[in-house]
Image (tube, rainbow, N blue to C red; front, side, top):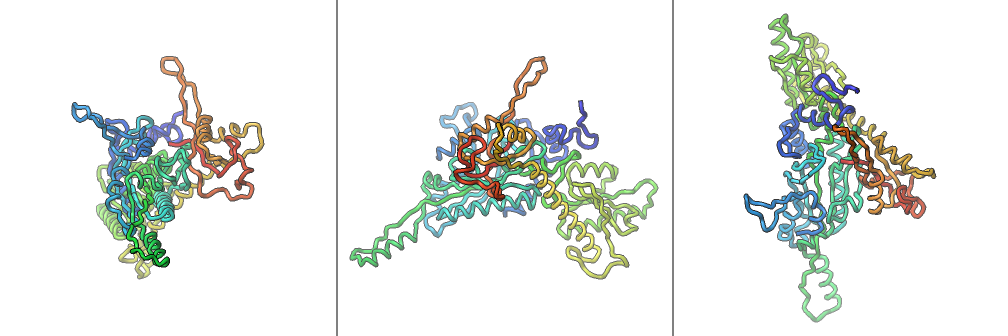
Length: 540
């Protein structure tokens, strides 16, 4: 049996046992603490700090709805020892709470658009496959709810918000995503259509619905009677009466229309995505722009033979550089704990994923430099703290003197480069695992290409008819079953979930030989006419 354990910080490797690696990296890096209730976790400051960075930087009655969410609604059936005559649902989202108020707040076209946003926690009672951040019973999220006068206005906002979510993932979390629209089967229950950004987890080959932006249409507006006075229609009626020379008094009858609504949400699932994509066998690797701590400064090279003068000089250098970074808005700290060795501190902060480590020893002080070590690659860079000849006398952005500006500038370049490199690595790996598959006329293109690709942890893009029956059939055909031996010598059959439609990407293949020709290109799964390319894969 292959030994998949590592000796420093982590006992499991990402490739060796991903599930245990993921659980261990979250607990040992102080992201979460497991709780007695299955599917519920204690969010610790190290993780909540990332969520706060996202908050600060990125986003300053209905029958059909209830039926669609029925498997994920938690119901309160008892109060103390008494059975409730009417069971109470703990809301999975806020539609039923907010929209009765929308009907009171909206009277005229002048009240539109109405936009409400909140950051809160919600409950979805997952009973199986609970996984911290990815699928948990309670989580934090941001949700927005808006009302518009026209569908065009609603459509425009859906697209704007979805692109905002793309920016959060790509520009803050260094996670590449694919934008698209959900199938009828996968869209938000009760909505008109759902757009999504989908992320890919290379270690498992699974997709993650990273965030969604829904156009709800007018369904909820009719359910909650959310209407507004249409001034344009009223004015047109009056103008018509005048032009016709009506002897009757101009009608004052109001024309009322139902609003068009959207909702959109982004949750702490994003934290699980960044851990799964960027983490390695040494622990977390945090994207610099959302890391709770971006730079840790560690005094090193000090032992029993080090003079008191050198110790003081190292400490002073650490403090000076800390102040330089803090003044520039870089989140930094000095780890000057005397009862831990420098090596222990290196491992500790590597496990917690701090993007950049600055090492300062007596020789570095003498050479007017610090050594910067990147968490993602381990690459070392000498950061000069003083220009040759004592400085050029100029002030640099981010500092109050030349030395301060020089250090800040080099550190900021390293952090920006690290973000870019992390994003490009994740994108290259995702693109290498995304296969565009056409019917090559073979006897069984499906099993030889699609099935094999999924089993190798790939996503597949195929010409698709977009019919629900076909989608259900694809999931059934791609489900795998493995016979396993139990502890008592018996056998059991373990089933792996089949592939489902992740989205219909907005960016469709543009090569001439990949264009969908209406009436000619066939669905790879059922041989009906294909409408667009669909993205399929196994998912969380």
